[in-house]
Length: 215
Image 1: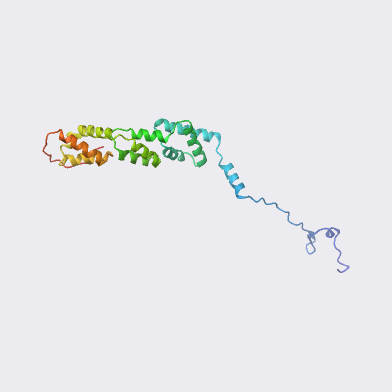
Image 2: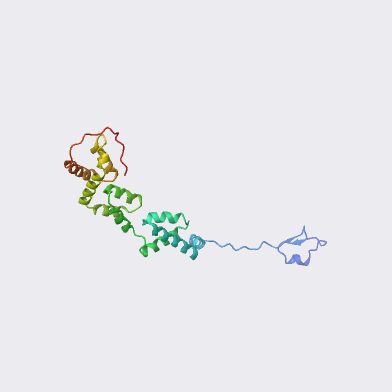
């Protein structure tokens, strides 16, 4: 280095000395980067989504009110809770809690539906399927239905509705359609219909159009 170019004393210990600018530039500070593993990210997300006690109590109170209005299946109650909360863990927690306390039970819902009068086995099966009850529980309830009770129910319905059915162009066909809409199967309808018609006088068919009967 030429003798007339003398560096300042501080340049001797400055690793970032820039002679053209005559200043010392310190190196950039080292930044410590925290590397998050998938497990740590999951834990962080769980902490963010952790419901407060107030949210838990509010959703549980709503579940009790909903079950107080009518018996709901687990699927029906879950659907209502999902409209109140976007936290799936909280929804499942509330659902388990009301089940533990005995306020919600799919077996009770299925038995109650299976005990309904005035509807047949097919209506019971379709209703429970629509309400989200499990297939094995539906099958258990359907198999427990008493065929003799369904036979008696069909006779009662025929006696109650025959005054309007008899005015149709084909009373028996109208009666069959009416009972089928109620969920009764053909092997229940036909024996009851034959028994009912055997005890009635022959009537002339009317001229009214065959409008469908109301359920």
